[in-house]
Length: 152
Image 1 (cartoon, rainbow, N blue to C red):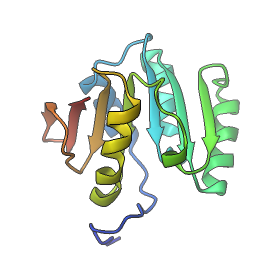
Image 2: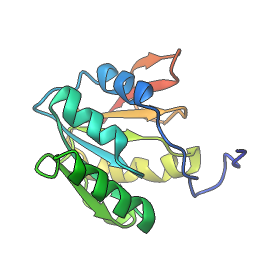
Image 3: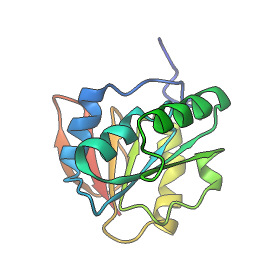
Image 4: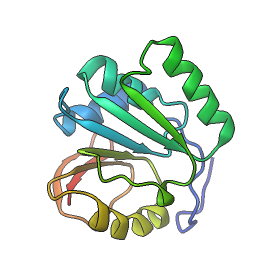
């Protein structure tokens, strides 16, 4: 699917399990972390963070179908104590609890998020962006998978 890179809205693109694993390895995710996924879709990346890395997760999804599907999938996997899901616009939700943020969003949406990150995230919070660059301090890059690790 072709999507205009200057669009302020992100289409629904599923993050593969392989990419999610690699993203969380890049962020050195541990059981002490709280991962926020902005635009969490079906919650599959959060399930990997929880099951394979022991992290807790918070997903924020605006699409009602994907939100309710993610709730069902998290419940079926028995992860409701580790993963919390919120329905709505992530610009309107507090993300200050995050130690890691995972995003797969178009550049325009990422640009709009930077002030929110600077305002709400603690210093040293890790942000992993899939495919697109952000104007934040870059810590590491995984060129093979198109992942970039930033910090606040």
